Figure 1: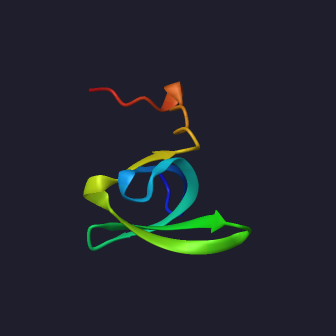
Figure 2: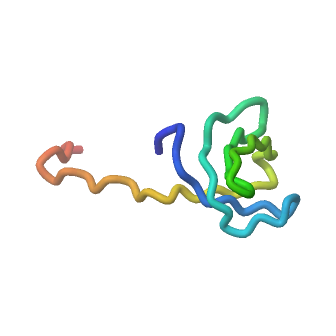
Length: 70
């Protein structure tokens, strides 16, 4: 997971159900997000405890040659 990163936002406070956004930071219990509304970029601050984020880019596959013995 890298910040900033593209995410899908799920938050009942703003009726977001998979809304595309960019996670900018996590500050004082809030996600700072940027989203496009009517062609313009807007900043949102949504509470962490009432918001779910899914990163749109999957995590990279681990290199099997770099496996660590335990």
